[in-house]
Amino acid sequence: MSLDLSTQFAEQVSVNQLVQNIVYASGVISALFVVVGLLLIDVGASRRRSGFNSTIEKLVGFFIGFATFFLIGFAIWASQYYIMAGGTMADSIRDWWAGGVLANSLAQNVDPAVFPGINNYQIFIFFIATFAGITNILLHFAVAERMKPSAFYITCFVTTIVFGFVAYWTWGSVGPLTNLGFHDFFGVGFVYLLPAGMALVFVPMLGPRPGVFSAHPKVSQYRPVSLGLTVVGVFVIFASLPMVIMACLFFFDPGAYAVSVTMADTSVGITFNNYGAAWAGGAITGAIIAYKKGKMEYLTMGPFAGYVSGASGFDVYVPWQMFLVAMGAPFIAYAVYEYLHKLKIDEHKLIPLFLGVGTYGLLMVGLLHSGTPRGGWLGIEEGPYAFQHGEISLMMQAVGALVCIGTGVVTALVLAFIFKHTIGMKVSEEDQAIGLDKLYWDIEPDVEPCAETASSKPDSV
Image 1: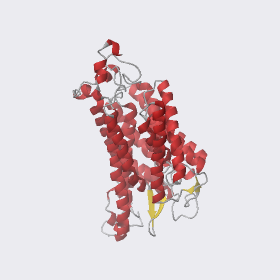
Image 2: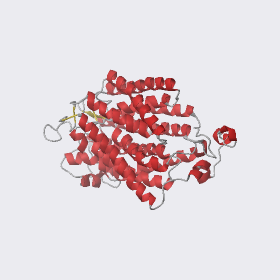
Image 3: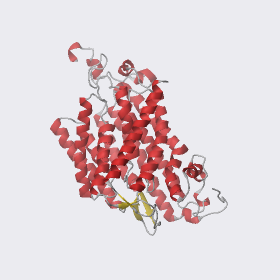
Image 4: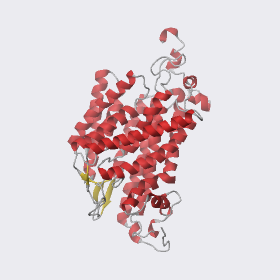
């Protein structure tokens, strides 16, 4: 694609374009605060002897994903719109990889006939790259303190490439599965189900951490540092996501006509209220389970479960529906969590919340809003990409969930096979017990952890 860089196109940098740019840029900033919330949860929930290393690995994994998405991931995702216009994925990669002409051109120098609203797409590189990094952070929650850093960092690079393809299939308005009826407003499939599918493979291979299910000579009990920090992290995420929701809407002239990323009819107010209703519904049921069962983890898991259950349908629900769907979500999380505990599988975040509740949420959208028109692109009136030509279907919701989970499983199986025959994947149990802060950074905890102190007393185990 050739551009006349000497020509100025004022319509690409109009006040209307600036307003849209600010909306999407605000979503980027809010997504970064989600990272802060996740790190606070990690600091609060990690064992004291491995907390520093765990946070550092998450940050490095985040930036590997972020940089890889800049390099090639966005070009893969954006190719759905090139294919819609008769182009190819190769065309998209040529224009939008890190060295591509559109990724590096000033908006005022790009003819709108070539690519209108280019600023928004350039901002979207940063926006989706942040979630590519977040996906790696989420995956680390499942393998923290057990997977070798080298193996994890290689996994982050590969996961981001796969992330780009799954996003292309499932998130947007004209991707292959979206066009067939799969509906996912907030990226549940590629941000949550993909790493959850990988966790299904990695976690049983890595085994439980010392002290989680049974006492270890050096770790009588696995104890988090601060549940208060975890709660603060949860609320930081709750406060950050509304502007991310705004960035998942498309705005068209005249005025500010909003449709969701899948081209379903919606409005800003409805999506915001659905978001709040999801957190509230999950929080109430989670609190009931926590008090009934005496398990404090549901005080934080409940709100997250409600949110995840609604994320795929914030655009199509009405708030009372969203509240009821969200109230059911903690029961799904509870059932999966208890089943994993019974099997002594040390994974209490991704599989209960994402695989269990995320799949539940996708299916509920198909059950309650089957037939809702969406897909295509505004302005196209006929053909396979006509505006709102497709309809949500329960079958496609199930197919989409299975594709996302299955892609994660296959990716992890391939990586695990390679690691087994090369660098290895698991940190030894003895090193886990000593603590990864000491192993990698020669850092001792500022206080003697209770679990380690108790382990020296024979009658305390």
